[in-house]
Image (cartoon, rainbow, N blue to C red):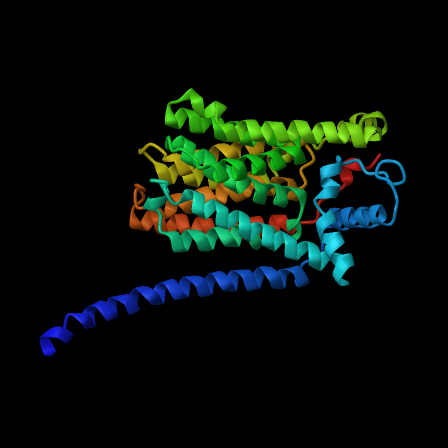
Length: 376
């Protein structure tokens, strides 16, 4: 009996030992979610989001967009908040709460789809899942602060499965149909929000093709799905909201677009400096080895979003969220990989930099956007 029972003891102890870190990981993830939910009650609501919810209320009461309601954004900016407004009306909830619940739900579904898609990735297998999952959740749900639920935040959430698809394509992996559809639809939604975001998608696709050493990556089905959705959205806008093109767009072109923050001021803003620091530390962490698919695609998309931020020339903090989020995730991913050339002391320094950059980004995201450039 002693001989039969003794081998079982180490096995049971090993199982219990492995279960404890896993349980701790999920508890920490729940804590991140709790902090994110608490912030929705503590952080002031974003004024843009509040206004667009008011627009939704007006539409549901019978008013017409671009006729009775003057709004300079294209219709998807309003559509994004219509589900939350409808849910709020149906269940007697505050529109802010209903919208936040839907954003949390969308983030969870997008993150789940992204995690499932990345399971076959060779580069992802060099990372420790639990710490990276925790940091990504924090960046996705807590770091946005006042930018939570903004169009850039929603666009970023929709873009995550597309990023997973680009990483897999960079590794020359085929995607099943459901992943092609999710990646393509997510990228299409992101591009529909702002045409500037084409730089992020384009950079990620180009780097994936270069990493895979195959031009075929440029013509994978999800890219055509994304382009098709943008075309369909544009046609719907033209057919259903002709006033946007005849009245609103000329106003935006002549009044809003020429209003630009000085380039020097934009490039030295806290957002750009934080992004540059995160990118530089990531490159230093890579050092002499060739970047893998994960780091390459994330950095490329981050650079694309940085180009979009600069081209908009407004300098508002929420517009910089996608570029900062991807730069921070790329740094966290690189510091977490077993293939990294970073020594223990350097890795500790990198983690300290990551923590400092995350805090700096949170403060920047919570910084009220100045409308000084709109003053006559």
